[in-house]
Image (cartoon, rainbow, N blue to C red; front, side):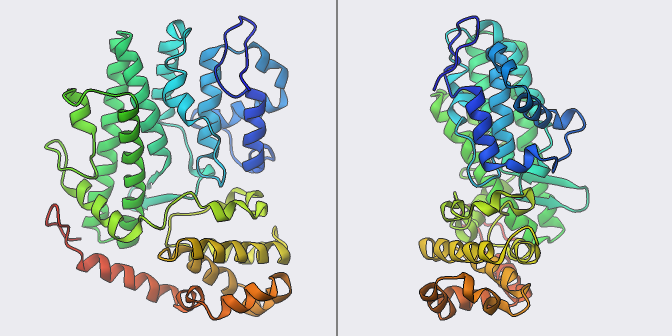
Length: 386
């Protein structure tokens, strides 16, 4: 349902009050005091909470403020089980709105500012460089996809100064990810490197899709500098980016998808602590689910059924089995603790399944397999090894 502002400008998307309902549906904890909203880097969270308490004010927003709300909604939910469906609005349609002219530079400024928004409380799909505290997630891909749309819109409208600022920030993000991968490889942090390859592949994939969506010419110098960075060697960047892309393709690409089976247990939306991490390293997440008192035995049983169902849909993905390992190992009597809370046929199938075999591995043994495989891998495109 489209929304019109008092100026009769069609906001060309979901009405903002309905968008806030979507946010509340997938991230109810945002409106229950579970997250810290202090500081300029978390102001987007405070904005959503403020409007939720003052819905009538939504009747007086302009196009730039609607864009800001869409951005805040997507940042708040991109790490949840059901992200808000405003991707195309913030990547393209609002930038091409018939009345965008006088709002364009403000939207460009919001885009640049959003690069520094703190997302750590609203996603668990993260990797780390423990030495300097750097964090990377799929939010960087969301940002890149919006930023390249902003760049194209600003360039086409001849708003050169802000367009160049967006471009500079895009390059800074790419260099940040390149540096993270390089440092993790140098310090032999296998697990965070593997996590980072999955995140980088997602992030640069988002960037590539929107470059194509905006039909940037193949001979555009900026396109050449930033396109297909995880797939093709680029004179501006280290081969580590292509190496990381090949590592992800070989080891993790089947692990990190839309997690459709995990949308069924709505109890997982109860707390930001339950947000799903980067697969396949999900033991700690499972342990969190098993130990929490916020979930009933019946809800934990439903989560196990969803994990088993997700594994059957994607049988080369090990993360769900590892989450099951962490969850059941934290229960007093293991899986038997929840026998009454799992359908009998599922319970029997699960116990003698490949899923259970993968889950039976100790966490350190499972991680060792991935470390060994990474050590043995030689990139066919770059010749690099870890």
